[in-house]
Image 1 (cartoon, helix red, strand yellow):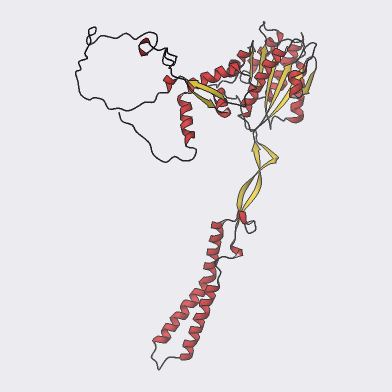
Image 2 (image 1 turned 180 degrees about the horizontal axis):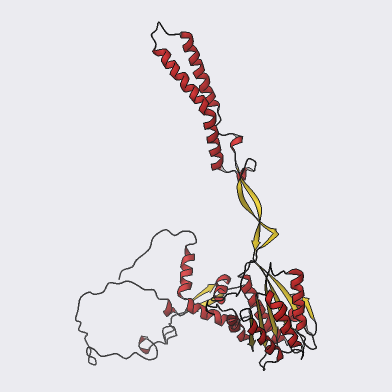
Length: 429
């Protein structure tokens, strides 16, 4: 058997590429483990990754080995049952001739093969959670915020701090200054040296000693002037000029709308909370800044904080249109659609005042939907749909790409419904 060993020096973070290659190779196993983890743990527990196990038989590495080559005939002693061409029956009950349990199980000798286990980081875990999903109508609103600036290069300046000095530009300026200042001196020096040579080549009778002395003094003076030109001067220094440039930002606001009337039990609210948090994590991965607005309603709507939104108890009837009206007012006051990507997630058990469902449809179709990127409605109930669902179906027919609604019966339905709502659409659909 031949082994190939790579002894090249590894760079920094050498395991990062290998780890990504490993995750890509066993993506099917990891996705299955991630989906099982989502079903058994709370969506709120997203600050940690997940431990993943892969059957050891699936991580075997390919090897190179030399074959015998040519054609050979082999006589195996002790064979009284089989002849050439017979097929051998696979042993039952696992490998190893029946004295052990399976490849990964336990044997009667206490020996077995463990599964290969490793941990996913939070980032890797969320990558698998949202793999294949996308936000419909995700847009980058160009909003110049005065408080969001970034220093950018804007040429050079003669004044600055030493930390911003540009060495290359400064040396270039110094070289140009030396050429400009020393050029006339070099020409005068060359002319004086040529004149001295002419004078010294003359016949001794025709020479002028005084002229030779003057030329030598001039040459000495010019050489001193050349040496006096500084290599670099403060005039040559150039500094990188940085200016604060406002940056376009990608912002989104997520409105969490939930019915808190007497028919919504704490179990309903817990399911809604998991759906809201899953959507928030998804938005957070697609936008630089995401703000949350919590609107709860029974017969009247109110903007509250997260604690009151999920855990405050209310009694009474349900008027859903009050929440939609409040969302519309908040958008007018704080979140202009030209600057923000607007998402609304509504959770309810389907109950509503008899004549209010028609009002909800009108409010959505005429006012809210033209301004929103996406509206999701989840109805948490095992029972038949009521008037609110029927009116929302009309809105969905009018805005099929921006409006989506699904039913959730139990906590295990949250992740499948979420993936159904935000699955990647093809160009044809």
